[in-house]
Structure formats: C-alpha cells, structure tokens
Image (cartoon, rainbow, N blue to C red; front, side, top):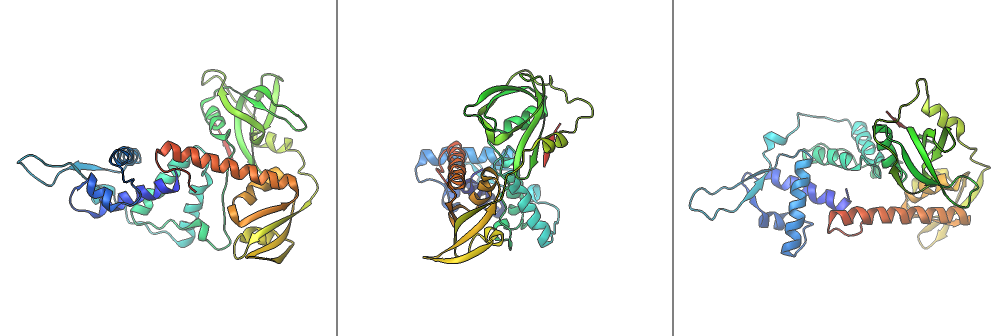
Length: 339
C-alpha cells in the first residue's frame, strides 16, 4: 500500500469516525485530502477506497439523515461503537516495536496486511510509533522480488520453476524445484528444496533468480522429508563473504546515522555533505543496507558497490511505481518461513 493511499484512507477513516451524521460523497471529497479534482476520477478512487475499507474490516455504514419526501442522497459514516478497540495502552518501546514489525514485510506479500493493521490502530487512537524517528534506528527489512511466489509455493506445497544464475555463471538457466522453506541469513534470502534437475537437495539465493517464479505442478504435491532442518541446510551452504574492502561514501550532514556508526572515518566534505570510509565484504549484501537511506547516501567507490546500490534504488522505484499504478491514480511516490 503506497504512502499516499495509506494517508488518504487514514484521513477517510478519521473523518467518518468523527461525524455523527452521514456524509455524502461530495462532502467527503471536500473534507478528505488526497482525492482528485475530476468527477470521474474521484468516483473511481472513492469506490476503490470503500472496498478497501470493507476488506480491512472497517464497518462502513451507508444511509441518509433525511426521511421521506424523496431526493435523499446516500451518505457514509463509521459507527464508533462498531469500530473502537478495547482500551489499549502501549509502552513507548512496545509501540516502536509494533511499528518496526509492520515494516519488516514492507516489500513482501504481507505488506497490505501490515499496513491495514497499523491503519486500524492509528485511526483508533493507538500511537504505533514513528520507526524512522526512533533514535539510532533506521530499519528497512527488504525481500527479493521472488520471495512472495516462493513463500506461497512453500505454504501450498507446490513445485516451481525459475531461471537462476549461479556464482561464476554468465547466463541464467532454468531450474525446477520442490521448495521446502525460505530462510534469511545475514541479510540474504534463500530457498531450500529438492532440485529435480540435479536430483538432490539444493539452496538458491533469491537475489540470483531472474524473472518470475512460476508454478510447476499442482499444490499439495511437495512434502518436506522427515527430519529435514531447512535452516541448517541453508546456513551450511552459504558461501564465504570474502575479504573486507573499503568503501568511500558521501553522507548528508545530520542524516544517515547508521552508516556513520559503521564508518571507520568521517570527515567534512562541504556543501552539506560528509565523506566516510566504510568496510564491507559483499556488495550484494551491503548495497540494500545503503539503499535504505535513499538520497542521504551516495557511494563514490568501489564501482561494483556503487552499481549495486543504483540497481537496488531502481528496483525500489519500479516497485513503488507499480504499486501506485495499481492504486489507479497516485503516481510514483515516494527469519525463516516454512510449512
């Protein structure tokens, strides 16, 4: 769910909770920011928002304050007694953890559920905390594009096929896998299962999967062998990260506290920037971390890390554009799992 859409839905919920009478669509349009000016565009977006609220379990009531005489215009409201939560008090650390947990699945298949849960809590007056404002905390737990399809395949016991480019390979090859589980190791995601092509247990790193993951058989046909420890298989197969290397980056003054703590050296760079030297081992692993800070971090050297960060940011931009496009009008904005 995009940031603009989340804010618009939150404002809509607050507006409909605060009113004692039914509000017409036109009154909502004037009261809730984020709706377009055009009549047709507004109607389409408002219809989608109503469906979205109902899917989130919000008790949207439809009616009219007028009686008899005809000409009544349909209005909307949310009865507080049907929506309010029991009295809930969260300590500051609990609220912060709640907000951070919802952001873990920011790019995965659970993103809508997490956004919906926070939307309900905030509208009910429960402060979930601003994770980005937490002192020294700038978290973004990301996943690879292949994650949702593989997670669903593991859940459903369904074999899959995908193109995979292994270490040292110049081209990707088609692989057929019976997935047993998806695990995270040192910031990377792996899928473990039975490779039908190699006829043995294999581990695949999700970032090396090219293109879409497609079903390769009916659900319920994959069984995890008794006694298999998916996590241990993945961890034992992870290749060494390599020798430490220095990276030179620019950090916006007053921002990017995480990299600053990581840095062996930070010096003024002028024009509102500082220059820092960081140590890393693997560009593929380090790039997503740096990309989390957006425009506050610029990689100067080495070239492979710089390119990895650029590609990561481009992927995020494409994902945001696709998500907002599915919304219809907003435009571009800015662990182990097993059966």
